[in-house]
Amino acid sequence: AVVSTQSNVAGIQFETGSSSSPGSKGSDQWTKADLFNSLKLGEIEAEMTDSERKRMEQIIWEYRGCFSRNEFDIGCCTEFEAEIKLKEGASPAWTAPIPTPYKLRQEMDRQIDQMVKAGVVEPLYE
Image 1: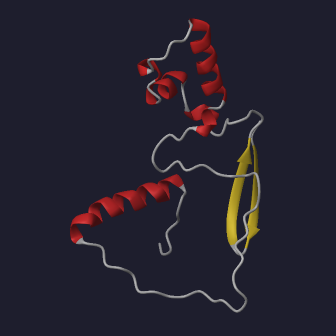
Image 2: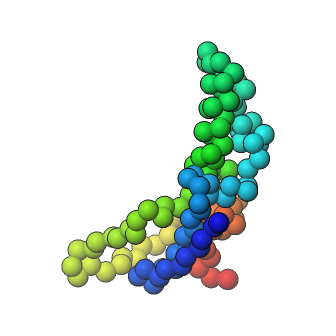
Image 3: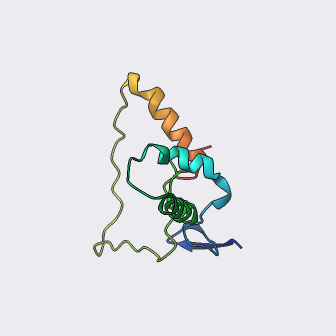
């Protein structure tokens, strides 16, 4: 069973999830074929018996939640609550944005869109 909890730390909303099996984050997202193909298990040239290879595949499948699905699947740590300690009297500093070269804007926009879809970042203005 998956359990989801929400917390609010320093005005930032966090959502964490845990599952009953280790490494099973998003366990329904993978199929064995997808996972093993993406890891290129068929290309491993190691001397293993069939039983050793099956055991390796079993362990990888059991801990499939430890593998990212794409470049923006960065995971979520639910083992502890992070804390950022600032110097006393410190306040946020504002800096002007650095202009993005025109030829890089399309790729930058693509990556930002993907990060928004993945829930890594959220738009400041809508």
